[in-house]
Image (cartoon, rainbow, N blue to C red; front, side, top):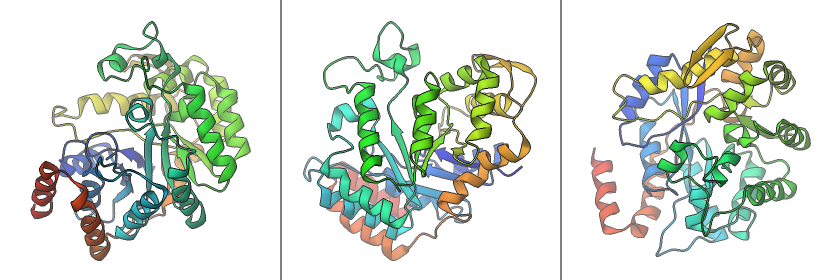
Length: 340
């Protein structure tokens, strides 16, 4: 079975480790999702440079960077997307409607700021991976898991959007851009509301979902194997595998990543009882042809069977645009990155 990981992250500046992890798990190719909008405005640049390590194996979905000295506008977002795609990015990563990120930016995804970029993505068939929302349990201190509180993902306090507000924004975007080729990450956080997932998959022909953990969705799959098996069989052409693995220097032997990947494999491919990663149950045992679509082919339908080549001229244009907007500290980091 061929495996393409559609959803990984370069978070700690160690691209070689991410390649090692892909080798360890037997992934033929990986797609690295840049998230400069969260903490590190250099992350799209870091991910682009990773293409040099393994050009035939690494896809990159660039993300928008935000700067205090250059407020985001419709025109600036179109410019960023153009620069990223011209440099060799394979797609566009959106994290701006993750509640903790949204709280900081306060830019609705259905606002004019994003509209030009969505129009461009729709017209040019640019694939999008879009994190919209979080598990519903994160909106209450009584139900949020400990890891959500620890990572400051608890959606309680001033500035956090409601989950239904984020869902409304997503639907507004798809109503205006119905051909948008977007994969909603983490099953669109609908494992507790399968009819919602079905409605979106039914209504929008290019609306895909990735099944990157959130472990909560795998607990849901195991709790209702018959219902979710029917779901995967029905929507086998619109579901995409991902892991969310990152180059975590503390994860020396890939232990936690192996547990998460094991949860995915045991749940979807296995057909025996298992316990692990906080879950227990009998795997769905999906058919081989369904598994192959989910684990490789559906992503390749969007991003192509081979990653785009890094364009040195396009990369230089992106760097030329980026550098004046950075703080002195980040410019120095960028210079070291480019020298290394």
